[in-house]
Image 1 (cartoon, rainbow, N blue to C red):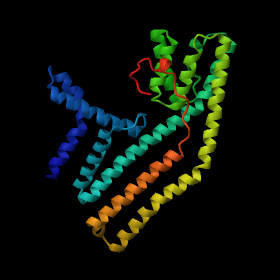
Image 2 (tube, rainbow, N blue to C red; image 1 turned 90 degrees about the vertical axis):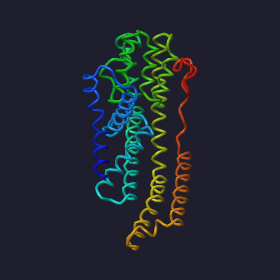
Image 3 (spheres, rainbow, N blue to C red; image 1 turned 180 degrees about the vertical axis):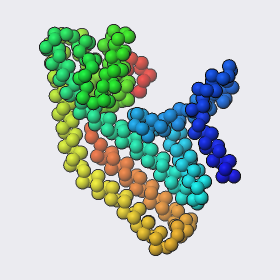
Image 4 (cartoon, rainbow, N blue to C red; image 1 turned 60 degrees about the vertical axis):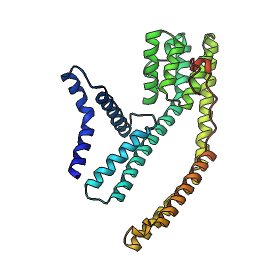
Length: 304
């Protein structure tokens, strides 16, 4: 039975690699099989991109559940009991989610710290070369962060294809994945279109000063909340340590698997989760101004 499960897992993991070869050797694909292959390829591709750090979006529920299921099944096939395998699968899924949060946090911090200097360099180029914003905004070599360089590359491609700066800024906003500083900068730049060169230069200086001051204020706020975050982490770590101590004294996990114990643990976990999210809301930094709808969202169906 375990060998059948192991064979199925291996086939599913190798399926995205074998898709191109199968498409070359057949003329027509069965619709259901093709849909399954595409879905499996997208799920495992999203997991791989999250692990290597190239996926900036939140992993979908399908990717998290697939990670938990595959991990738990593999651990169970190694001879571990089913409940420990299930716990390890959930832990693997949580690790994948935390990895995606780490990538998004790193990208958000680097973009926030790079936009101010990038706008200052753009303004300096406009002053020294007397060129318009359209020709200096997307020049290579000015971005101090690889994430910002990637966004500018997206905008440069759109500007080369369409020649419209507003569409290029929309491309930058879309590639930014709703990052707050990018939203604000693109919205402010769209509002400055149609102004004179001197007005645009003043606007660039104003935007960069606002971004820099807000970043400094946010950094100071986060440093003051560091002690609160550490205390909140200990509130979660201490019950886990007590549970491990109880298991070591009991000699097994079976006393914790009675119906009353399971209900108590689930209730405690629910209370901790609610308190965690409540504290997150209290420590959230105020949001940036909402982007201009007519500029960044031409389609009224796009949610804010």
